[in-house]
Length: 355
Image (cartoon, rainbow, N blue to C red; front, side, top):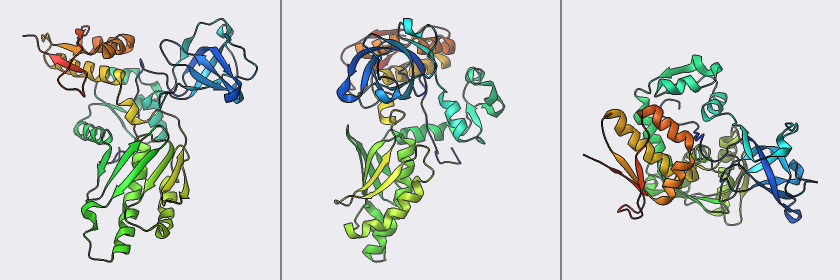
């Protein structure tokens, strides 16, 4: 964060799916010549990853074990993208699939991007597990930043972004691409001519759109539909796209406007997009544990429990690291049980107060 603006985001879930630069041992399950690669069984319940021929699959047979690095996290219903390690550990060929080492954590990645930024943590235990080189930058206590950070996260979970001038844009991910639609809203109530007003509005909105692409880790094909401008005038916005993407850490490129007048952006897929990380059984399980931990920290004698859906219960049990962190924070194991029907159909868990 710089002031009240978010610059970058990252979510770290040590007991969750594999992440960028994790090192593992995997087993080749299926060689697929038509796709120039092979599918690889990964540790635990991870879906199979894909190893291209150009990254080490060429010449491998089914059943072979080898050490790999995750080059792209699981996203869009697909498993990790992998690359063979240039130097194979002596015991890698013996299997079984397992994690050798996790890659850099979220704080390390953000600290590398922003070498002058202070690091604030809400608990001393978090400071203790950070790399030694980062310790001089660490302070315990979020202070006034806590509420602001929570507000920023809540905004990033919403598909609609409303700007102070009354304009808004909506972000709609699909399996093939992400569509971003700009709506002028009340921002069109200007006294100058329509052409100049619409051009100025879009030039003001585009930098915020590009910032949200980065904050939300959107990638692949991204189409932006500016508001109001005729197609022949939309190329006048190209310089704003180019300038806004010039410092993108993934080297995003503005490709121009399509025949339909849509601005085309291509951005490398690396980490899963934020909307995928904030949804699903594992995300709901961690949110439920966090809610229960907060109660037990404020009322240590409380006997509150969690009722969760069977799928969320399975995700919680599969994440042994989350359970350990819960015990470290509260001094006890979480009390939870499966329940199939919930009044809130959008939340597959609820807190149960046992008086």
